[in-house]
Image (cartoon, rainbow, N blue to C red; front, side, top):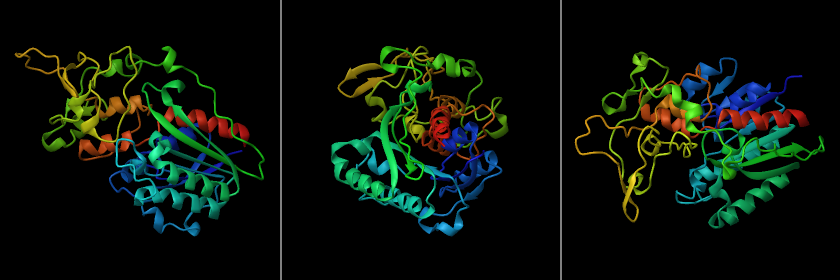
Length: 335
């Protein structure tokens, strides 16, 4: 039996692809960012792509589905951001998502969000969300998970919510980890991107894409200076370590592991470990294809963009495909 899915805040489709690989049929995807929807249309040709604001979407627009999945915008919950929670239009999108659950009454739902929503300053907003979810009439649970514990080559903590209709009368048990980052059992960068260490192209002026000039699909990296915030920490992980979290912005992309670790020179100040006469810097950002690999997108998944910066944003916002797939398989077991 094939179960049908509607996806919201779909982004580049990491969550969608993980569920599709597990056997779900993605029949509807909603993504408001017009810079991202070309990538969705390219890679999910059988899905109905809706590029309207989710607040303009009604129950009648969505096919009958067995489940709905999505990652409501997370910036307003971020520890690194302003932590506004539901006092922000992006945080309120979570409420629209809950409303759609109430209206569509699927067999299950899944929501993904950042660790920051569990932060004490978001407590009131978080508790309100919990009460709203309970009012929907689902048996639901949530868990803070590190994707490195599930074979993804980066440290990335996210909160996952899964709920089942009370008609199914099941509580979701999260999958057991396949790895253990804290004990040193993880997938290192060498396993993920070693074969890509050559042939990466710097972006063109103003970070425009090289397009078909890339010998490997999307294997190009953002150029430009590094901010003082970026230079406040070491941004290099070695080949035998997992990547730092892939963030939604090229200015914050980790440095390629070919480079030495950065050197601390003062409180919140680091510098690159290079000799003065070095002509070709080994300190470059990870390429679009490299961060896609770290997010476990397959090699043939094509990201469509004109400006390389947009690629980093869409990939950094995605749920790692492998992680999504593991959770999706567990949901199928229940269904």
